[in-house]
Picture 1 (cartoon, rainbow, N blue to C red):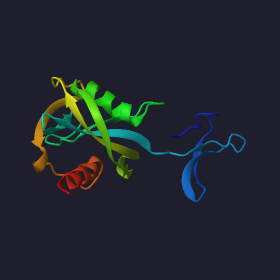
Picture 2: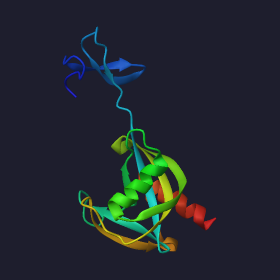
Picture 3: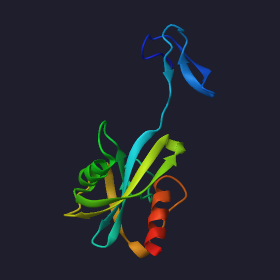
Length: 159
């Protein structure tokens, strides 16, 4: 961000509350860009006893993950993951249970992850171009982002 969204003055890096943040040069305006993380919902979607991992059209070939999406303004995260499941997979999601909340600093996001079951016929939307079904006992997490939720889900199921 080069210009202030309030007064159009130049933005500069300045120390605010002990952190370097983009701040408006116009002292009277005083706008600060806080750059707070964006809330994202993630769903470990169980379908016919397996978990759906999907490939986003923007990702490198061979990279699959759980279903994710941005939380809408004023939306309850439970409703958000059910909505994302329907939008991205064409499935009706039900019985969502919170797995956990995870920082994803690389993307400036906070991930609110759920396990939910789903029914219907899989119909991918324009964001996804492939999916695979993974047996729950073969599911493995990874060391960042939604992979942390998958690890916790697997550990809880194994306990």
